[in-house]
Image (cartoon, rainbow over all chains, first blue to last red; front, side, top):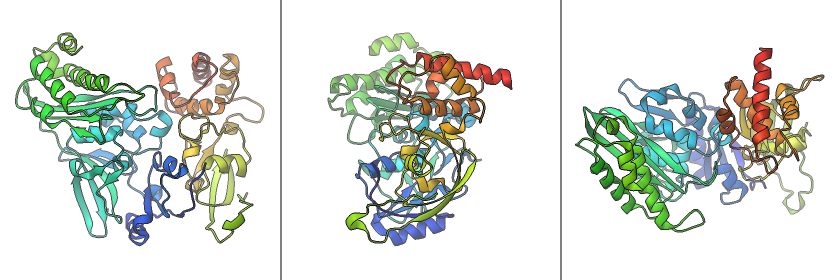
Length: 301
Length: 173
């Protein structure tokens, strides 16, 4: 298989790339890691007339903590960079848990977090992680830069709000209001398959209270699902067995899974319940408090 | 080295060709290619290095794994034009003229292959791992090879082969 014909440009700066996109109109596509775009082009699901390959644009492969506490991930930061990142291990438990679960090691060497967000596949893991963390995407175009919260970034399956002459240059995780905890759990039939179910949980605690919480679901609906009510059930109080059970129940109730070859809708909904419980029960806050892991896990089973 | 698409048929109008320069297994090359040419085709048909196998052609199996600038990637999922100015290493680049690479020796010692189709990809994924982590655990090896499918061996001996190679490389270091 090979893609249909296209014009290929490999600009050396963002300005040059944006100029090419402006002239290319709706028929241009940005190529970063290409781990979704190239397969789609080979299958002729996508046949862009112009490919703007940004891999030669310097200075986009970073991920770094800014002085204000926000985490910034550049458009050419590969999944593997995040998997082996010392920075994430200590400071971003949800991202650190998700990174090694993206696709497979070879795809992780090439694919990018920002590209995954732009691709807007409802089965994409990073969208859930960034949604749970309250993240945003920075778009750059001829009119300058703008920040787009992830809640507004994706408009539908494989659709985002970027203008045709804008490039997603960065993803941002806002500063924490407390100590971060959380995780990402995913069931897949084999490495590299799409998630049967994925659950991202990110909480921030101050003292023994949860001050901010985010929960998002992968693969159980036509889009990434933010379980906002479930997250709200955790905020403003200590993490207890009953608050965990309530959040798990609320998260399961907003899942819209479909029965398919990966499992029944009922099975997937229960997995959401189990995963939310497992992640929360595994956090240091839960273990310090009344919510013992075993007790909570049993309740979900 | 030039890639020529003969048999253009009705589409014989002008199509854009790009000139790229790259290195493959240490040798500098130049190629004129269509941008839609995949890296696996540049390697197999252009450079005539057929050790890199096209397996599933859908980013699943890892048989086409090569190193680009030292990182293991699937060459069916990268455009050839993207290696302009970069370094490609294929399985043919592992051995020296007289000696097998310890990874290759490991696959022989531990019977790490049966039909051999997945082997080049396995070896290149292993190379990436051992370059990054010279002292991997069995779990590390299984994790690193999880993007490569083998339908014969059950993976047991492949994992042993890579661990064998790690020991050999450590002893040589």
